[in-house]
Image (spheres, rainbow, N blue to C red):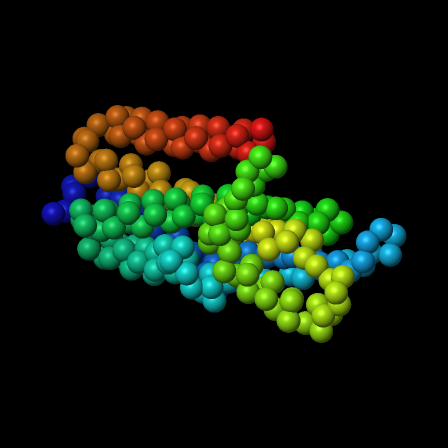
Length: 234
């Protein structure tokens, strides 16, 4: 089924899908997230600190949580090419909407795990003082990489010192976005509402109604994120 509507707006949409797919694919090859941990030997004025960092690429860190980007990038690229060549068709619009929404949801989940502290501030520890959360619970996507880094640190000769210890224990870590993530996240955030609008237009002929529904959905998501941020600060 082909949708007869404004040709220029449809071609612009498919061009955006093509560009988004290429950007996401390239972003998966670039350093996306830096993780780190801090260790120490001794105490007081004689304490010595050690910093260990590692950069991750999504292409080199294949987990279920990275598949929306690793698979989504090529799918969006192919959908964009198909839409430009064959015009707007329902299955292609549904595919783009599903991929962009899945990538957006996963990017929000991963973003919640990114918490960075400066070297002299140590590491962030999972949970607040009144909580009992493990690393796997508060950072499920990054936990395997952090555990691997910790194992590498503890295997070093310096870790044989009886006073050697990880500053935050096994649940402490640092993580921040690098260039790959900074490229990827805005793309999926922008494409998802546009794809949702195109999907709604398959059934809703009035553009203002479809636009209003998408805007309402975006506002609800922003409100949820704002309330979650307030809860984390409490």
